[in-house]
Image (cartoon, rainbow, N blue to C red; front, side):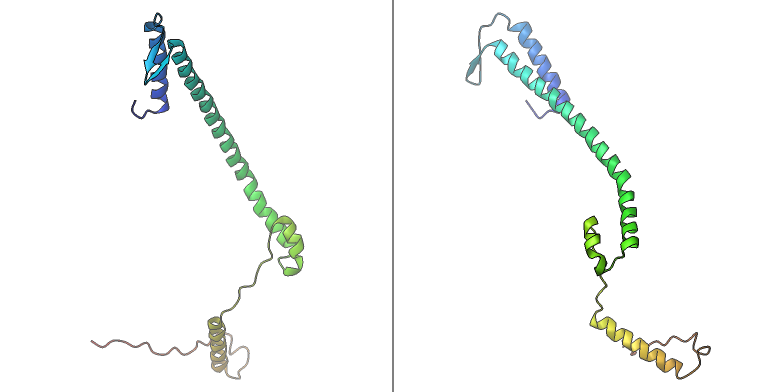
Length: 159
């Protein structure tokens, strides 16, 4: 037989079993593929496959129900876990000192981002530029001044 979906297979098995019962009642044995068996043995094998299909169909339906229940539970719990994490971090802090308490909940203390050398150099250049732009002036005169480091001119291609 060619590949069949479960519905087609079920119909084929039922028809084959019906045909065996209808046309092979008086036959004592059948030789199929070099194997000799009685029609009742063949019907028993077909019935075993039908029973297996019914059982697996029930299991598949039960699995779908269980997966839906899991998704529903996850949908209800996920927002609560986010709120719990926020509460724990707000209560105990996100520092290394609170790491043992956070570890009890499965959380890690927040890590400070390590500044790269490039970031440090850029910050130092901006600081110097701001200081040079403000000069020694009063606080009211320097409120709107933010120094930007001088950018080297970008080379342009002459055409």
